[in-house]
Amino acid sequence: MDKLIKGTAADGTIRFMAAITTEITTEAIRRHQTSPTISAALGRVMTGTLLLGSSLKEFDRLTVKIECEGAVKGITAEATTDGKVRGYVKNPHIELPPKDNGKFDVSGIIGKGMFYVIRESGFDIGLHREPYVGSVPIVSGEIAEDFAYYLAKSEQIPSAVLLGVLLQNAEPFVKASGGVMIQIMPGANEHIITIIEDTIAHAPHITSVISEGASAEDLVKLALGEIDFSILEERQIKFECNCSFERAVSLISSLGHKEVASMLKEDKGAQMTCGFCSEIYTLDEADLQKMLETSAN
Image 1 (cartoon, one colour):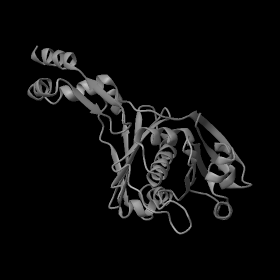
Image 2 (cartoon, one colour):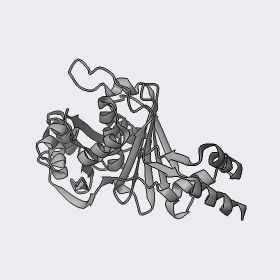
Image 3 (cartoon, helix red, strand yellow):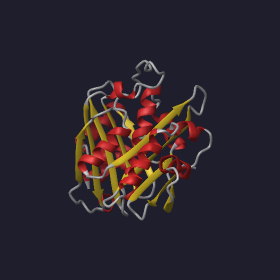
């Protein structure tokens, strides 16, 4: 089971979040049938969203949205306080040749655009408060750097973000996926910051250590080196969507009596596919007839 941990170091002046997301990325790829480069991009975005959303309070929701000029056109991921994440891409099957070094050309498939973070509170329990929306231009397209840039510019938190997805040719196609986020808080010792920067600069790629069995705690050690740290919380995380047959019925019903009657007459039913998880909901003639009878009352 995938896991996320968070905690502090250096007397609370360093915050960290780390997660292993191999199963989450595997499930997203299975549902969306993404190409290899898109799989790497979606896995990175979902992992980063989980890390950034790890400080959510109960009933909060965090959405990261990339709108871009590259072939993928857009990536969206959403995390909730109970460790659930879901995500999708606009063009799941697009592919680009690998870079000269053999790595996925994630930045090429994203291109220029905007990086949005949307924080919502109480939405699922009917508290429709105005969401907080922060945005920055995409500076890298490699995603980890874009999370760090957003934190520095929009939330004034200097951060180091490492995200990675390693694929393989046989099922399950994801060999390793995970990430770590280090946040520098006010009052942090400059010497400590220098140590962390040097440690990260010389650290092996996170997917290589995850594929060898590294835990979320090992990822923190990889980033912090000899600096002692305390884990304050750990939680199980998973890919899970909040769509349901009932929600599908509600959405189709909201189209109006005339539209539903047309579906019944012309199509003898209706079908809806959830964009976030690709689950397909099928309504037969009886379902639509019941919908019409309910709306007429």
